[in-house]
Amino acid sequence: MKHFKRIILLLVVAAMVFAMTACNAEKKTITFVLDWTPNTNHTGLYAALAEGYFEEAGLDVKIVQPPEDGAEMMVGAGQAQFGISFQDTMAPALCGENPLPITAVAAVVQHNTSGILSRKGEGMDTPKGLEGKRYATWDLPIEKATIQQVMENEGGDFSKVKLIPSTVTDEVSALKSNSVDALWVFYAWAGVACETVNLPTDYFAFRDIDPVFDYYTPVVIANNTFLEEDPETAKAFIAALSKGYEYAIANPKAAADILMEAAPELKSNPLLVYASQNYLAKEYKADASRWGEINEGRWSAFYGWLNQYDLLEDPILADKGFTNDFLPEE
Image 1 (cartoon, rainbow, N blue to C red):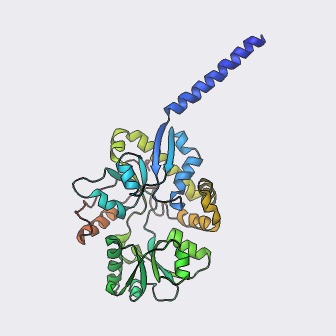
Image 2 (cartoon, helix red, strand yellow):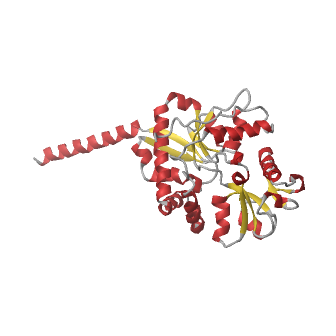
Image 3 (cartoon, rainbow, N blue to C red):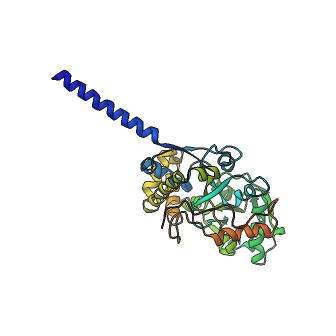
């Protein structure tokens, strides 16, 4: 009888191992490439991983760092199915005779949260105030044209801005040390960082000056061949990712804890991570009916502006490069 029971037990264990192996074998591997080191823009991704949403969807998701030439190249080459990009920086990749085969499939943050940050009370709370001030520039055509546009909208003269090549890695230190006067920042991180150390600042958002700058930054991009050949897996991934961002919206502190567990280097400044997560919890979806929604009018308006001012080597179709087809139904 003992021998019989032992055989039964072994058979049960073998069946369980077989079932688990079969289950794992059925999982589809997805590679997701970030745009930078892990930060609060990415929290929904890590939440979906930690909460098991990808596993429930039958997916084995691997998160990797970007190569030197960016996530766009890696996704375009098919080395990753998904990644993080930005509507402005992906524009050149969509132009010309051989555009990269990438498409934006979800908006990570619903509205553009970037703008100009400066020390409080020095007159740079409006674009015109940048005249005569030192601005840390990356010397990018779209960057400089954006600042010129918002300045001209308010009667300012961009030629009077002192352009300083940017070496900034820490916005708080740059402003405190008086090495520069103004910085282009994403408020969710650099602006909030100043708040957490009680550094008074002035800030204006580009979208508040001109709605053409309410473009999508960042976005989730996907490889076009993958989307065409395996649309169901793409939809399953985006549905699980959407659940991750909805979790981060509803549970900012818990989501921040998940992010810091995934990226322990962030534990050196938990106050910033929690504050940034609270800020973005209101921005991921904002006024959209669902997370990830991309508004065609806003997308096309920005690409139309790029064409109007010849900011790309070749014109770009204004409505090119995005789709909402892979988002969960509302």
